[in-house]
Image 1: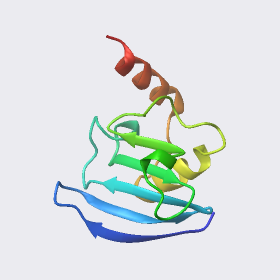
Image 2: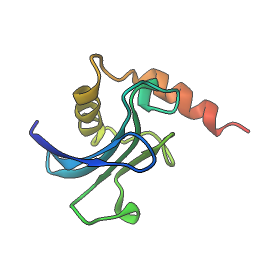
Image 3: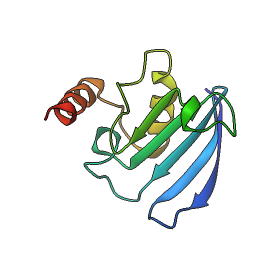
Image 4: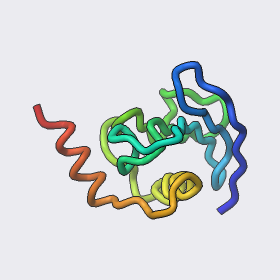
Length: 108
């Protein structure tokens, strides 16, 4: 899978990485340390995957901002999420854990 990221500082902490992964445009906010707010309690606290650069949240195919919007990513987009995750972690995403975390966050 091909990718290329540009780094952009964030005034709210972490660093934004933007670029193309497997033909999709990706925005990811990455922190130096893992957090319970990150994907798989990791370093990525925000991740948006859109069809092309310039597309905003209304066009998001996947959106994570300290939690998954709506539902976990469809199987079609998980390889892109996994690839971005692998760029900043030394282990794979545990989707079972993410499912439990997501369901727990949805309960009132």
